[in-house]
Image (cartoon, rainbow, N blue to C red; front, side, top):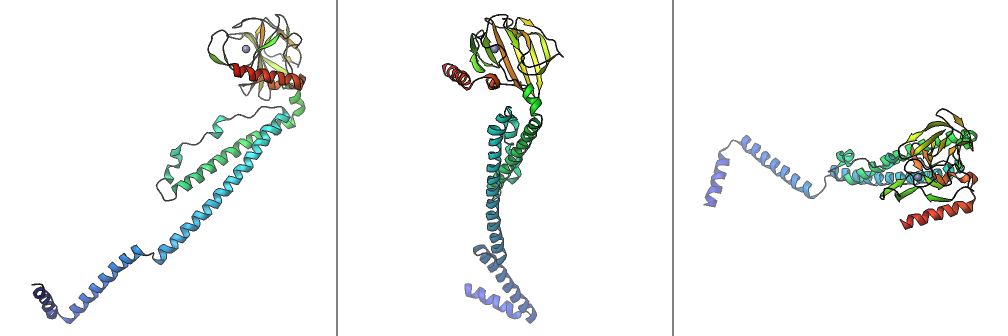
Length: 313
Ligand SMILES: [Zn+2]
């Protein structure tokens, strides 16, 4: 039956005009060529595919060189940041610039368009490090402006910066509470202590710790009788629980000037001065601002006390 069918096809072909037979043969040849081309190219690379593949490999290699360059730029910036933080700022006696958002990562959705491809991971990583680098540069430039500003006005700065003890240390009974987290003596729960508590007899004179303008002199919840001074350059100091205030808002005061007296007003158990140093409206540890009239030994004593109090809590 198979042979019979075969011969029928041959008969049918014989009957066709010569031109038709030729066209049919060409068509079959073309069909075979197309199919074999598809099969071969799926097993082996066509020259074009091979060239694209080579190009991809080269791009990948160049990309990793680029990432290496980003990493070395990151190291350079980290070094600059370190010097800024541990050399220039301490030299000028200023606190670390604190911009929390600068180092928070962007949301992953920012890189969503890179997802799905063969190289999406390396591209996303590259973009992330570049974004990180941009933010670090932004931070470094802000910090540089800051320190440059201060270096230029160093003379004025040195007179306004809070730099002495706010009371005569011979009157100091003890440092009853340091800056940092503590169990609140009155409320009994964990709370940030935003300043340092200096126990001294009622009536002990309180000094302005740097040249400043008085911005507050009034009773405030918690603080009791409070004086706040604005020193400029982002610095403010607060003196709480006073028994007497000698200055009014708008007054100019100089370092060492008596502005009030130690007391026990507001939320306070016992006569003491609550002293706060603020930089850009955030409190900082006042201990770092006693340097002008503090020997290295007493500074170490205070720091040890701070360590112990942290351990005890
Ligand atoms: Zn306090």
